Image (spheres, rainbow, N blue to C red):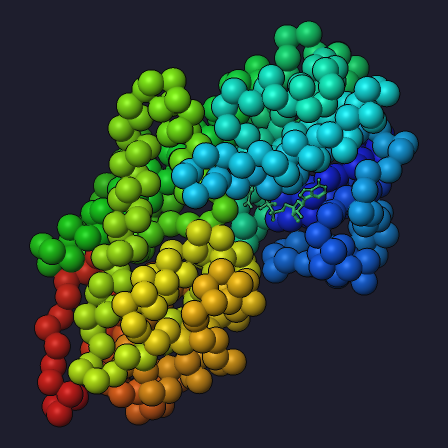
Length: 438
Ligand SMILES: NC(=O)c1ccc[n+]([C@@H]2O[C@H](COP(=O)([O-])OP(=O)(O)OC[C@H]3O[C@@H](n4cnc5c(N)ncnc54)[C@H](O)[C@@H]3O)[C@@H](O)[C@H]2O)c1
């Protein structure tokens, strides 16, 4: 049995919470430091400030919950510090490292006094010298541990990781490294102890590759629409080659979230700053933006004459989360709003975050409210509950029963049998039947 540690986790976002709940579940005591008053207040009231279904059930365990104590600033006396703050990109796609700088400066005195620090935030490759500067030196006690969790299954991924990567300087303190390894490598999954640069590149490279796969599937989808072919069959046939694989190839109108677009951008920019072309990663970002534009144009093109109302079902960047950062659905909403379309959105968990990002959006309390009087329903997020809507009854509430499904969620035959003009991504586009004969 490995010893229980007192660990200071800095940042109570998706990664910080998965880290805190996961490590508390394994018997460690967590000082969870968060500067956002709203998140801190929710934690102090004994709840989680984000929507992560599996995490809530682990957090519901009273022993786990009692080991997590929220604070607004780092406390003295911990064995280890784990930094999980955000590293977004700015408008130009450059990494904005202000959160990490301020978090590292806030724990520099603890590190100077001998406490090792592990950075779990994703950093652009080559950030090592700045980290060391912000921590006031002590590089032998500084480690990286990139996180590979997927939102919607964050706690499962934390507790059952595919691999654990630890980045360390060549002169790493062996006792500190042993403690980091003990705390983080608690399953039989592969452990890779690598250099700092390699650790950054593993994380950025993994996300960039996932983004490439998705961009490729989405580009094939657009091609299939033009050729009248079905991309799902095509992708399955391609992916059954074990060198390619079928995972992470599900076609849609774009990928989003706080990681893939950002890490793709960060990797591209690091290369470009070194004078490299970065053709592949640049193209994947551009293609993703184009796929969202293409979908928005399809939605707008389906509006019947005189109707400007679109119901957008799903605002989160994917199902299973309330996160709307770089959500393709919201990007489509913004494009449509800019073209004068009235977009009425509905999402079971992400409405509040969506409204913060796209103030021009109207929010409906239910999917049925969003759909009533709309000329088109666009499926933006693959929430399974949208499958179970009473589509037969909803058809009569619309100006024209038309659905465009950006996630290939609904059954095409069933929707058409109910009288809908139904289109999806990466499939032959049926010609419109005049509404009088529907
Ligand atoms: N979200 C994911 O799925 C995921 C997966 C793997 C890696 N990552 C990486 O992990 C990092 C965190 O991502 P996230 O989605 O959890 O971000 P997030 O924005 O949800 O959470 C970051 C939190 O840190 C807090 N914070 C900022 N500065 C602070 C400080 N000085 N002290 C205390 N708290 C502070 C913020 O208020 C925020 O609540 C990013 O680098 C991201 O790229 C994210």
